[in-house]
Length: 173
Image 1 (cartoon, rainbow, N blue to C red):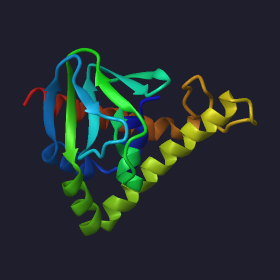
Image 2: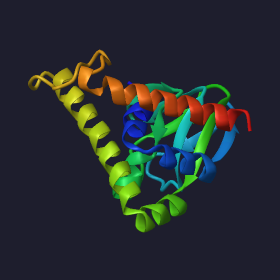
Image 3: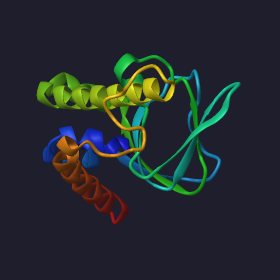
């Protein structure tokens, strides 16, 4: 499941418009490092298209992510340096939202902050439950097969529309 669907399902249309207006679209080349493990990052990133690789020192590649993924959300929440390196695999458009600007928005707009943090918490909770299930420690509330919970279907449909609108706005600008 793409992170963007969880995140955008909780944000408003105005929030998405703010993200589009505030962020800067950057086309990254193959081999560009978006995030380096252990080093602070300065933006929250939305992968608009393309593909990136998530790697952990001493482990290797742990994931391959594409359109609709969000990078840097954990460091936004807890300000700890990233626990993985993210490298671009092919030409990839990424929307970067400067950390200082997003933090200023969070400070000045408590409703936005509430929606954003709830969305991130929901996604991280689902990911943790899925991980626990894959490790064999109990039954998770969500499927590890990326199936949608029927209760989420309506909000995910709205979120998908928001992401499509965001991509079209940014990639045709």
